[in-house]
Length: 105
Image 1 (cartoon, rainbow, N blue to C red):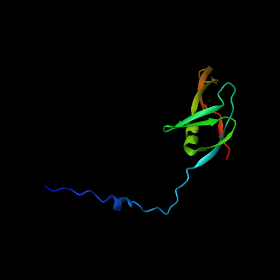
Image 2: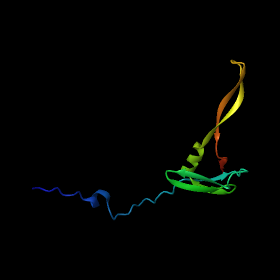
Image 3: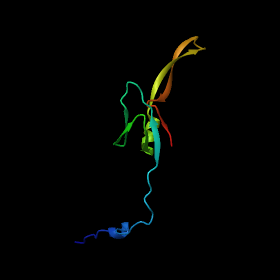
Image 4: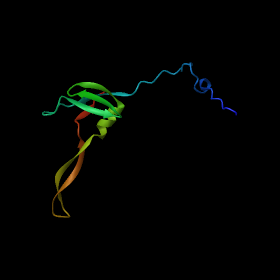
């Protein structure tokens, strides 16, 4: 009975050889989350199972993934607006950030 030989993993993946390229540092941003009366002094942001607790009122450095999560954290706010066609006030949905934050550097 013939047996198959396993592939040479050392040749395939160049085990033991170091890469000449330096590892790239993930992109980070300095952000500021506003303090809001009645809310905790921190905000919790989760990205792919990684949880980051960010203090409000302090400039902090976070990953680009956290900034992406903050950008997509929106809530619907309904405002009353006069509709000329219907001749009455209607509620119109407006999207706004659910967390008051900004990039500072």
